[in-house]
Image (cartoon, rainbow, N blue to C red):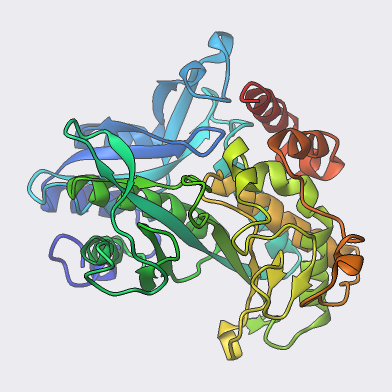
Length: 423
């Protein structure tokens, strides 16, 4: 339901035209339109325009100062343009229905209309097209954990968790129940279907899972999810935290990435096809090189190797401490789960690398190592480990031909320089 409209698709087509969007804006008293994008590090940004500027935004783009955005350009090339992708239209349910607000995710263009080289959304589009050219399709989804903290009298976040609950607890131990319900209803209004929600292991820790989608939509579903969580939490006088390890004595927050590989509509993981095994092998092979993007801050490395977060580059049918596992499921629900990423990623970059690594594994016919469930130190000591610090992860990524090839030199140069400054 969108602002009381029972079925959004009855109002707009799957690929709406600018004429449909303009009519929708007029008929639903939309007063503000947000043009959303990410900086290089996954921090969400937006510019608001009035409905009178919608046609200009679509045909010409809306200019902004790119030199003020982390990882973009310097003052000598500061003019870039936001061009809305019409199919990403969503209302913001926490805003007033009268004089409402809608949002589009945007492509970033140069003044001559060419693609901006550091537009990470464009990077993921390119990798998805590569997947399509190989006659495969991929669906992805995230399981993103977060903490709810109390705020002080000034509304500033504290380090005091909302509750002392643990895994799957119920009220009154679970004090986040009402907040999660409100988040789920809001997501549903925005076209993102929640599947499960529950209290996680840590005090004040929560998880809400939603359905998988094609990679670009999955990346933007995650961005939308994080925005909704932060806004609904703030409306309830709480602070949402997505840090991988916000409390040293509590469970860490991961962002498991689930993937399904399809060919001609068939789930290749369900049939345990050779291509699905090669896809997994490719991701394992490049996992250390991707870690600087999947675990992008120093705090990320306080999580890896603890509380079931992976440390070794290995896989298992079901063991939750492995880098890749195959959760128990049947039919179309069979998927692989990559367990190293955390919520601080830029999802466009993370998904680009994960998908590209899997496709490379198929092209190279990479052989999947035997699974590892429980193993003594004599076995694990011989396994390759994930990087144990951001410094180590950056050094590995900087030397990776794979990372440079997938992301391009401009993104790599800006990303590595920015991350080096954080050390």
